[in-house]
Length: 76
Image (tube, rainbow, N blue to C red; front, top):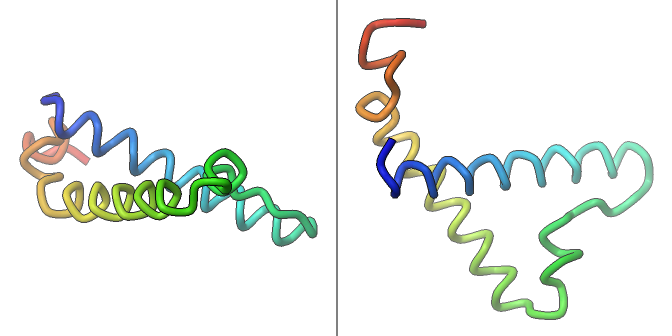
């Protein structure tokens, strides 16, 4: 796993977990946006995190088959 793929994968997981918590929080009447809770006092940094997570997701969609051992080997 190359470094760019690893960083992109971590960012995608952070984004996915954050959105999962946002969804659960909305059902339970809370605001569980972890990125906003941590970086809310720095709106530009918070926006940068969202842009990086989105860019990482695009990168993973485009390059996944070449980086994934299961997909490139014909596995499930």
